[in-house]
Structures are given as C-alpha cells and as structure tokens.
Length: 294
Image 1 (cartoon, one colour):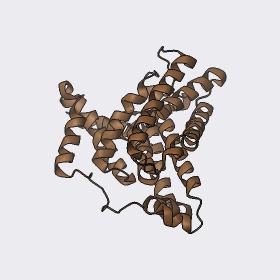
Image 2 (cartoon, helix red, strand yellow; image 1 turned 90 degrees about the vertical axis):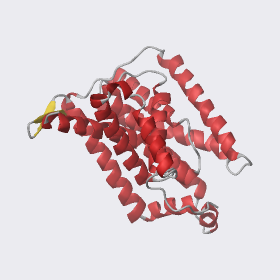
Image 3 (cartoon, helix red, strand yellow; image 1 turned 60 degrees about the vertical axis):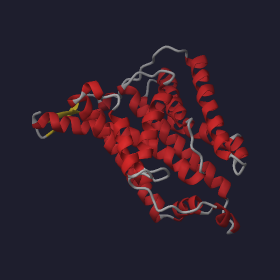
C-alpha cells in the first residue's frame, strides 16, 4: 500500500467514525443519563434522513433540510420520551418494558416511513459547496468526507465544553448519578431527561442526514445503523460519552482498512473486535468505575 492510499483510507475511516460517533454518543447519552437502552435510536437516524429528503423535495436546499431534519428528529424523540417512556420509569422490570417499547417503536416508525414515503430507495445529493475534493499533501480526499469529520469534531468540542464547563452540563452529569437527590434540591429532573432525549435523538438524525448523500435512503436503515452503534457503545463502555468516541474511531478505521486488506471478512471484523474487548475488558475500554444509580 502506498502512502497516498494509506492517508485516503485513514480519512475515509475518520468520516465513518464521526457518523458512528454521532449515533452512538446519543445512544450512550440516553443510557447514561436517562437509564434507557433505546433500541429505537436508529429510527431517529432514519427520521432525520426522511425529513431532510422531504424538505429537499420542497425547497431543493440541503441546509434547510438538514436543519429541519435535526430539529424534527429531536422533537419526535422528546414526544416519545414524554408520552411513552416516562410512563415506565421506576417500574419493576423496567428494563424489559424498555426493550419491548423501544423495539415496538422501531417497527412503528419503519411502517410510518413506508406509508408516507414508500418502500423505494431515495437519494439525497451532496450540497454544491461540498462537491469535489481537497488535497492533503499529495493525497486527494472528497470534500464532503472532510466536512463530516469537521462536524463530528465540532460536536465533540461542544459536548466537552457543555458537560464540563457549564452549570447545565454539570446538572446533566449529576442526574446520571443520583436523580432523586437532584430532584430534592429543586432541579426539574424530568425536564432534563426530556431535553437529553431530544438532543440525543437529534444527533442520531444529524448522523442520518450526513450519511444520506453517501448511501441510499431506505426504510430499514435505522436497524442496520443501530447494530454498529451498539458495537461502538459496547467497546467504549455503556453510558460513557468519550468511550463512544474511542469506540467509533476504532470501528471506523477497522471498517475502512478491513475492506481494503481483508474484504472477505469485512462484515464480521467489527464483531471480532467487540468480542476481543468483551474478553479483555467486558465493561468497555473507557468504562467508569461502577457507581450505584439511585
């Protein structure tokens, strides 16, 4: 492999990693703060994509579609949290209820998408400003891939600043440790849960929108992406935001170089990595010290 190919594959792996991170970080944020393992998270990836597709049919503007798709996915996520998931918090065997309810939403949202937009494949073109390629030294990389990487890094920086430097971020972190105590101190914990759910599902929608110009838009895409996202979360550690970033970087590069070096094993390489992590460090590579949730 020559140096240019190596750099090109690395950049491609980074763009895949950023897409996985946007989905997996929302998934792990919901688990860490709301204590819900949201199997329907991939459905918000799907909804963001179709909202954008619809807006592009109306206005032919990618950026308007992106904005509406992100907001729409977040609003639907908050509505589902308020009207449905909030009803089962604290119940006996809550985990089983979560599993059944979020799985039901996968099927419901998939059928709603088919009913409204049909089962046919859709396409979303890249915005004109991001067509073409850039030169990194002597290596040529697609401009759109670089854009995805930049968006992912901006989300990482914003999350770091919000969670560690702002009072609201510290309240979110506190709610993941002891929501009862936070409530006794006068904090509106249900509102925090809803906002976290909305932000996390909006990030899922953003990932779907950014991925759409690189892939076809089709019902069922949410199920596919949730499997890779689960692998990322398992590798990084459930509920660990930075673990999701590390897991996404590992899986992104494994997918990028695996297809090049071992194409016949490309579909199972991520599972192999996950199994190795589960054997060596089953709690995840960046899992925090276990703290009892109250």
